[in-house]
Length: 411
Image 1 (spheres, rainbow, N blue to C red):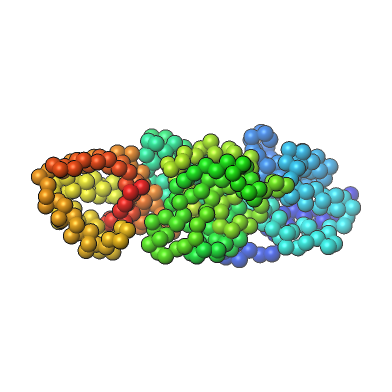
Image 2: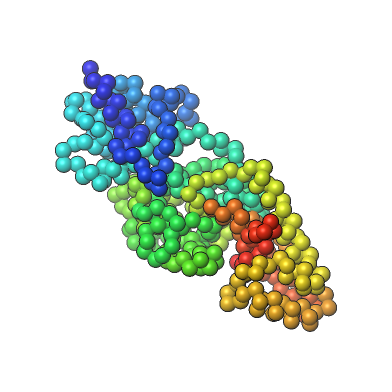
């Protein structure tokens, strides 16, 4: 009979890792004990993904059923032969049976940097299974989805998780989630080559097929519009932030291993691709997901009212009332508030009537900035001497107790 201490050592290493996470590393605080893990409560094996299979392996280890654990991990490897973490667990199981294990990946001459990466991945994947978040809650970021946006993606970088939400009458409803990899040095990208993943509200720009890409990108790639208008306003540089797959011979990558992109296993990317609409689907990348609460709903209603008042003031030809919706630090392209106000006064002075219609309005709050909201809409404008339709984007910020526009341009 194997000593229980050996099994506990292996299990503990998988749950919390051998090195304590720093404040900006993978979020693993207050990890639940596997003793509280109820395998019978899990959905069927074929519907819970590889994390569920990994958790079932660990449960078998916890129950001192190493033969069953080995059987589970072998099943996992048959369907995912390039899953390096599963190979490590199998190797440790075989060593544990021989009584020769001191910790996860403790074999002689094991490359410790790669072992640390796999420990991080094991911890994150297991925590995803054990997480008890209420999937019925709506993310704070998705204030309003327009009729075209069938789905929205929210990336919680602290948990290496990409959530998919369906648009149900403008409100988000949880669909599924996936393990992801982010930048080697974490988040909050600022400069070209800093190996960080940006935080913000982005949109899918293209669908690049596998045959047009290097092997590094796996089964495909979906570029995002980083740097967006807010990034450029704040002098953030760089480019090439994509959702993409993994290279040949690699099932998945550690939680922090990309140059800034959000990376999924190829089969997961293929599943995510079904939810993406080019130029339409929002991808919100945040350090931690936050939920829509009563205060956020009050703020949402207030902003909806301000947007309608902006439209009404513009249509009324009351230029001063219209301009009060723009912040003094407003900027759009090369225009600041003063040049924008002067141009609007000149344009409106030559008109006898204006009509403005807004449709397909969406509103997304900015990560780490609940006072900043990205608003997209279709604008139908007509006047005594001009008519046009366009897609427009505004950034509204709450300043001095009022929602005001700090950016406006074509979407």
